[in-house]
Amino acid sequence: MFKTLDNSSMVSYLNSLETIASTIHKEKNTEKVVFFILLNLIEKLDLGYSEGYFFKYDKWNRNLKHLNSYFDLKKLKKDEVEFISTNLEKEISFYGTPIEKMLKNIEIQTNLNKLDPHESYGLLNRFKKFTIIPINYENTYYGCFVLDRQTKKTYELNVDEMHILELFKYNFSLYIHSRELEDFEVEDIRLKTVGSFANSIIHELRTPISSIVGFASLAKKKLNDPKKMELYLDYILKESDKVIKLCEDISEYSSEDENLKDKSTTFYLSHLIREVLQKLDLHLKKSKIKTYMIIENDIEITFNRDKVITAFYHLFKNSIENCDYSKNDHFITITLSANGKSKINIKDNGIGIQKYRIEEVTIPFYSSKIYGTGLGLTIAKEVFTKLGFKFSVESEYSKWTKIILKEE
View 1: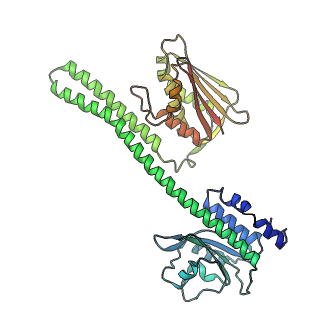
View 2 (view 1 turned 120 degrees about the vertical axis):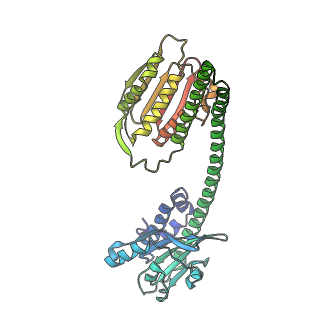
View 3 (view 1 turned 60 degrees about the vertical axis):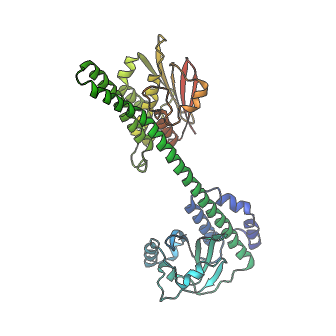
């Protein structure tokens, strides 16, 4: 992009902070931003550099860790490539050495000579004429870019070219400072969420466990009364089932999906939905609910199949549990369409949801059912969100409820 411009046009182009900022600051992946900067400083700008690296400063261990690199493999020999790949994995301990002062200088330093061969700096030892661009914000040091020419010939950067390096320096310093603040904020929110989640679990478990303890105490006093014993034991079993179900749902909701992609398979939703409905067949028959599937276009999905089965299971189970027995006919209609973007509608003619409750039904542990855990729709929403679907609920109280899943 830049090679087609003369020097003055290039500087004019790069002087636009909005252009650099729009490229750097909108990207959340730090490694992509680092690669973008190195690609421009080495490949696009003709500043004479052949290799570039970013080393992130680890303030706890007081060393540098390699984050990303850019170099032209065509100009490197096989042994040099092997040397670089081996040394990229190593941390550079520089605390207390002469290079520490050099790396932590707040100014851009150019035309630095090859490092002292007697000092072991791993990858840095191969540098000949290099530039260090420190990345710092106020009094915090985040790391540095190291650009190397791999030549003994001195290349004097003019004022405009130094200005280009400074633009990248200040923008990336601001970028990485902002990312760190965001990470602190995310961690703070995560800890608060974990605390809230734990309190909710304790609250939900306390009720059935208290019931179990209460009925067990009563049963102990009625050992010679078989009818009372049977009644109390039935209550204990029901409350125990609720605890088990709650634990299963909590485990499903909070489970990590690190291997989600590894477990992905490709399947059609119509086949999977029929499988789920078959599992719920006894519940459907007991509630005299008829199911209808309308396939305008079948939807092909590549995802963790078990997760999707669980999600649909919770959706249909919710519809069954909301069956309105005052009506003569009970039904669940599933519509699949894939014109442009995929869409799934699940509609039942159950008891419906009051308007003020619609936004609350996917909140963890919110349930109007006696033995509901309040996690079913929450789990389903989580799965479909990861699938790329927007999850929404529409309902008219005492008439119908519709779950709408629309690909974003």
